[in-house]
Length: 347
Image (cartoon, rainbow, N blue to C red; front, side, top):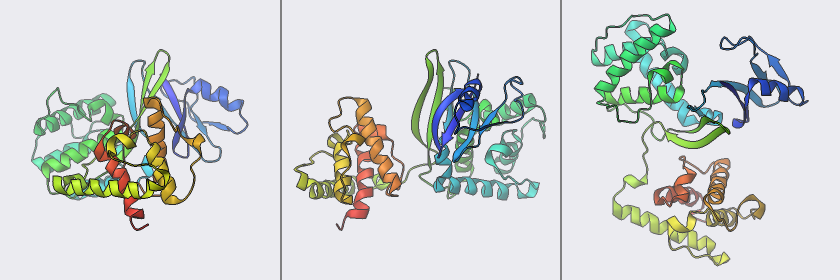
């Protein structure tokens, strides 16, 4: 089953079958569809791409009922850290394979057939694989990829029980998340000291087809390892926690709010919202959040709202998963507070 994902300003608006897009488009004067070449998968249904304002081209994703598919939110593709990592990996591959006169320009488009991955293993690990040099058909490409990935998994000592971030199907489908995870793993295995950019994280959207419709789940996924203040010793971390408590209480005192526990008192997002209002000298309308959240959904709404504010103001230096805050993760809470502290510590 093919679904079209519609975006606006990098945000997923709706998931529709192509038939629904056509129907919706012709009844909406702001939605001007243009018909492209018919899909090979279903020649009877034209692929529709929107061409109105800032509405970005739709993306077709094949998902069978009961299956799930993970994609990168378009807004994350503009993340400078992600762009830095992709450029780094492309330059690294091209430098490694320079003798073979192989030039990679796109990680999605140039690695899916197994040729580049095969040559990387040959050069980096002196590995010999019994595969075709150039696989032309889709089946031949998948067979070659399977051999290459099996070899990678053996080198990395990955077992069947491990939760793999890549497989033949995903790489051949040009899945960027899987391709990035695979390349980072290969680079770190063969060249442990390679300066791969750290703290690269993307916002992903997992789509799953159920009987009642399409289930979606947002998540923050790290592609490369984190480097943060929690690599400090326990004594120094404790000092940071005390500094954050003092900072919060200093600015919340005028509201009669006293913070004693960073994890529990910030987990519903309310005090974070009040703190931001105090620091930035404005009142956040009560209609924007739940002042007395009663369940997980309302708490998650509040924390997500906080992260959106921090992103808009350029204060969120490292991605934070809102679920971590709601689930009383003290490290995630301190990361948010540290973003505010870094800017307003002298206020």
